[in-house]
Length: 450
Ligand SMILES: *Cc1c(COP(=O)(O)O)cnc(C)c1O
Image (cartoon, rainbow, N blue to C red; front, side, top):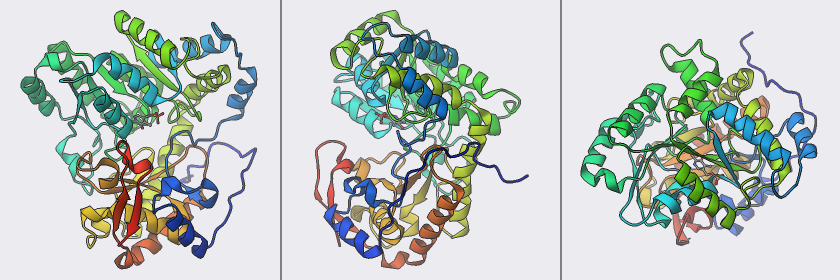
């Protein structure tokens, strides 16, 4: 059979509230043309993010009931710890309430003024936490990442030669660690190859630098490695995942992505001294080391989620459903980042509406258009999000796919809405930012249409 079906049945449903175009017009104005400020009840298909929006399995809900809420030493923590040790091979696993809490702890310890953090592409919260510490966040994507139309099997790779140059210029003492984001969210959800990870590891070894993963989508990345990297197709995803983590000295993870839970994060460390300092900060700002800002039930849901995400029928369905939307958009003549990413399709807004200059936020104009036409909520990843420094200089609109939430007919509807927007692209209008918050401005900025 050529159809890869959703490998689950639906046990509990949530109604979607339908809205009219007139209602959405009023809602858009009220929200200052910022979809982060729209109530989710007013959204028909919500592709704002794949973060924390996934559906949990019956086994995860069963774990929620089993959750033990002891302050210290809960069996839920030990189940969680054992599962994550098995999946990653790391011995030391600190739970946090989400990815950015892990980032905040890590960069408070290793960042600071004068320090430089290289990454294939910093995610927005990662960059914000690096810079909050006083350090500089430097993106080193491969040159192919700058061309959305150009397919490349591992477009998320870090430019190893550029890393060598940065180390030579900045000096290794200023670089506390090298980070690689798998998959590369800001750069289009593109995977990083094992070959690239090994090459980065070799550079780090030569300069005695620690390598950290931003491993939010480690399972999707491993699936791409299995599909695309020579010699990897016969390997279980579990093995590939172990090798990826085995190359690293630490990792920050938001469990809201491949952890298949609605809240949770992890900080993985090897270095005992760093672990000691991180544990103390964790206790100060998150919670005791056996719950880290979470309830025992959340740890149970994570223990099960990190297992289910490695099921290969799940990964085949997951990556195929994203690719399916990419094919639909391409058929409708919409330029997208090629090839489709792991968790999202990224529309190239600059190519779709060349009449809107960058200063007028073409990505935000597309986001507003998708909502107006069909109540679809997407997110701009470009000038509005990153100001003067979008990762590879792109104006993208991300359609992020929540895990195990929408069916194929929902995705057919999304493709139709995008096609209708493309047909009316000449009528899209640019925007002006009328309220600009000081950090992570895209969350609460307000716009006016020009
Ligand atoms: C989501 C994400 C984070 C931050 O995680 P939160 O749980 O949202 O705090 C960091 N890096 C990447 C690549 C992400 O996708």
